[in-house]
Amino acid sequence: MERMVAIGYIVKPRGVKGELIVRNDSRWYEPFELISEVEAELDGRKFGLRIEGIKLLGDKLAVKFEGIENPEDAAKYRGAELRIKETELPVLEEDEFYAFELDGFEVIDYKDESAGTVVNVINSPANDIIVVEDKNEKEHLLPAIRTLIDRIDFKAKKIFLKEYEGLFE
View 1 (tube, helix red, strand yellow):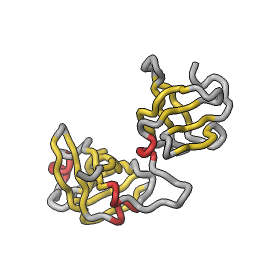
View 2 (cartoon, one colour):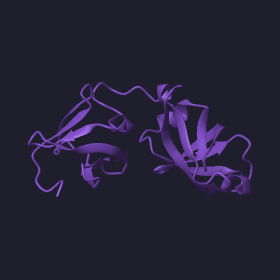
View 3 (cartoon, rainbow, N blue to C red):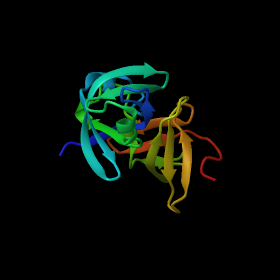
């Protein structure tokens, strides 16, 4: 079975025609522009939604899905996570990657010691935040910025950090 990737979630209904406000977690508009259907999951139930139209609204999207015709119907989908097949994501440049690809990577500090494992990546407007869980199951938040990250080795599944005091205290 092909890997499904979360690209956003439904925030709330918009207007009287059944549109929904969607938070775009993919950082790119293209996944919504290039596809006609998404897999949705709400309360453990999975189902397909066909896209009729999309409008860009700042950092969110207004999406019209087939069969959702009024605000009452739209409200039933609040909180649904939207996913697409990994192969449907836009192809990135050679030096780019998707945040979900870092899940499970080991983080190595500047002393060449393991600082923990990536358990999540949070998209934020300024930069992504890498959530690292140490051996004591304590979570640390690392900004995904070039001044902190020395390099990422995708083959070894490791993120190497530059010298920076106080990150894991």
